[in-house]
Image 1: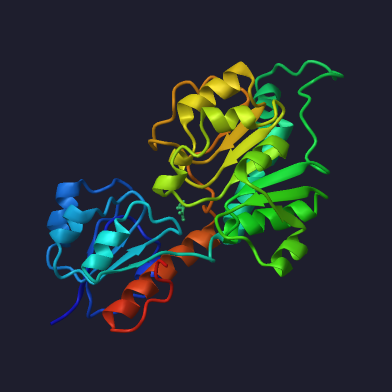
Image 2: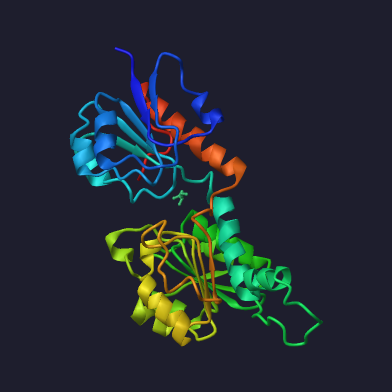
Length: 319
Ligand code: DGY
């Protein structure tokens, strides 16, 4: 019986080309998410699903797809998939770690630097014709070098962000449920602390946790109020790790100085309170969006799917 796969959104040609001709492909070549009903209908009889984070693969979807053997997410995050339900049904779930680590860390730093040095405001100022003369006190920002960086979630991406801080001669604090080994702490000159200490002492706080029930609204009113009034918050992890309504108050009322956000609680909606604020830099979930990385993510996702369909172990199963 030939195998069949649903690709629920657009993928680059380099990835599509890896799929052998004898596999039947149902390709939804669009950036629009399939509705739950359409996802269920199109998954009927499929052996594999290759999907992006905009496909919600919950227990209902899995229950309606008894032939399914693998859900291959084109992302390192997998909060769009009910992994426990998949396991119960012996469906393998895979993600795309490693290939996006450095690109995502680059972008967390992009947001950090943009927020610290007010790059977006400067761009608007320069191109809007407001720049009439050299001005001593124009668009002062805050220094990054020599300051304290707090990394919340010290996995691959958190560590890659910390590594970049060495070049800025920063003190690095981190918090994670698992302490890094001594060699990693030495190499990155990073010190493990609890979350509250990290928030109290850091000038820049960057989030790199998974979205799980324990991390939902990890950054909310209580934790934002612990941060320095001069601190900048960066989120390139998942939107719901931050309580956006509390963040709006923090930025408006000066509990913290600024933020750089790539992710939001209800993407693509952005909390309306964030939009008029000058002290927040906003991006539309593009931290991994370089050409090379997006191709690497999608080819890894296809390879994961094919491996399982061939009866081999997945390359990068979700742990
Ligand atoms: C990821 O890999 O989890 C990204 O957020 C998807 O763009």
